Structures are given as structure tokens and as C-alpha cells.
Length: 91
Image (spheres, rainbow, N blue to C red):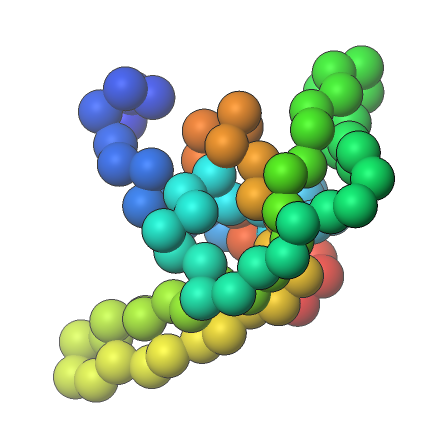
């Protein structure tokens, strides 16, 4: 069991119900741009959370005998969310 306050903001969750890639750790971004207008996402059907930036993230995937580098684009930077999500449905 993992509790919310025991894992790092660098943990990455693969989510098949998410419709967007969302990261809360800006240190993982290799590039990003500020939004000129306020943009929000809706979570839980009723809560609106501000998107601060959109950009690209580079992830190193470590396998038993090798590693691969993946770059994800159009990642929403939302520090308030407190986690990093890759949307499996949009890959």
C-alpha cells in the first residue's frame, strides 16, 4: 500500500481513464510554454484546476537489461494535482 505523503512527486502513474497527460513536477519538463489565457481542467466531474503551462517531458524507462528514453509532448503542468499521470488512452 502506498500513501499519498510517502511517494515522491517524481513518481509516474499510468492511467487508462485520464484523457490528458498531467505532471505536477516542473523539474521533469525539458521544455514548456506559458499559457496566454487561463485554462482549466475538470476533475471528478466538478472541480476545476488551473493549468499553468504545457510542454514536453523526457522519461527514462528502466527495463531489466536495458533502458529507453521516451519523450511525451502536450503535457499539462498542474502542480495542484500533486501527481504525474500518463494517459494510456491517448498514446
